[in-house]
Amino acid sequence: MSQTKSFHDFTVVNIDGEKVALSTFKGKKVLVVNVASKCGLTPQYEDLEELYVKYKDQNFVVVGFPANNFMGQEPGTNEEIKKFCSSKYDVTFPMMAKISVKGDDIAPLYGWLTEKAENGKFDAGIQWNFQKFMIDEEGNLVGFVEPRENPNVDKIVKWIENR
Image 1 (cartoon, one colour):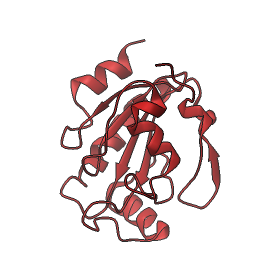
Image 2 (cartoon, one colour):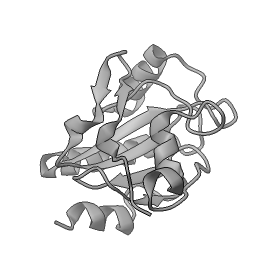
Image 3 (tube, rainbow, N blue to C red):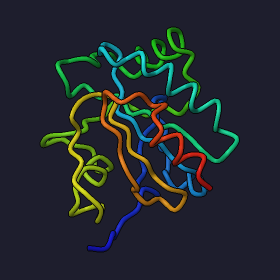
């Protein structure tokens, strides 16, 4: 099955309410992560920021998508989420507006990320907050890492460093 769309075909809204064409990330490896402020995995923000800072000059970016799909663990407004991320974890990677990552109201980007029928690669339903999707420089979905896996796992680091 061939992929008809790429990551770069989507437009989303950032945490400040501005539209962002994901094509602006062409030429970069992108780690897409659904995040939440009140989750046991929330400390992964620190590891995500470390990865971003370490590799951002090597055509790599982390993009966070707050989502309230799991036990109400992201109840805040975009403004509250932004304040939390910057004050508690000094997040500097791009953060998008809160979306839904599963269910009837799933955001189109997450439909593409999680459904083989849309991405042409595999099904990868969101299991919990902090599931990580790996997108290559051309906007192709190349892999994912489960929520409990730390962002610094070999699978992600080797993928970033493999040029």
